[in-house]
Amino acid sequence: MHIKIVNPNTTQSMTDKIGDCARSVAGPGTLVEAVSPQMGPASIESHYDEALSVPGLLEEIARGEEAGVDGYVIACFGDPGLDAARELAAGPVLGIAEAAMHAASFLGRGFSVVTTLGRTRGRAWELAERYGMQRFCLGVHACEIAVLDLDRDPDAVKVIIEACRVALDRDGSDAIVLGCAGMADLCAVISAELGVPVVDGVAAATLMVQSLVTLGLRTGARGEFATPLPKKYTGLLEGFGR
Image (cartoon, rainbow, N blue to C red; front, side, top):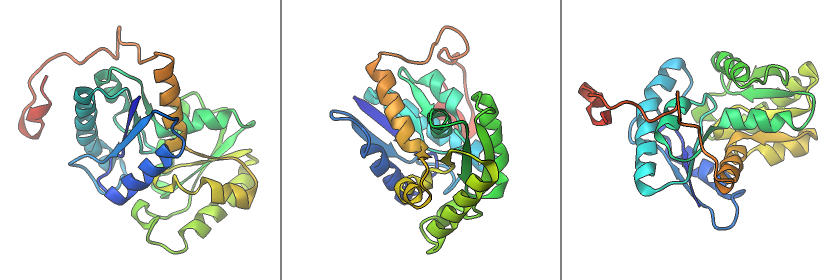
């Protein structure tokens, strides 16, 4: 089985971390390929960043289809381009926010999301509503550390743990969802410190895609998610015509 993890930003060090976290949970015989697009933002922290990450992401999905990839993970907590990717892919495609929220809903009455910058909180709430997780998502909290500073700030882990502690106390939640793929390696240390389950969407989505492929399941393509109609694209998007 071949699973492709697409980090929609272009920061290779983050992609390497994401790949390591995905491989740590993938089953025997599953090849995990982690990639960044050739074009796009260095990090995704706004609607503008998210919109401009999608062409590069879709280019990687198209490459995966040519290579016979079985399933995909979109490794950004905004789940950018998820619907479009599902139109292109023959196998299942999951976003890490989608996977993390569903996994956390199995672990108690409710969960709290701890993300990076406060300006991204609205997107997390929007996704919780889209995925039917309003009942379970008890709060969305920001640690106010920029994505690229997660590995640069020596106090980042301490700040994130404290934000998780505040979230648990304020929301009365049973679990934490980490709201950034750049936090993918922090589950164990946060869980050990706070004594609650901590869900990373990269690991959750990898295992869910693996399970869907094993079950022979993919996105239904009779209607909305059918292959896009062929048409001409112009300018910078000329190569995206079908």
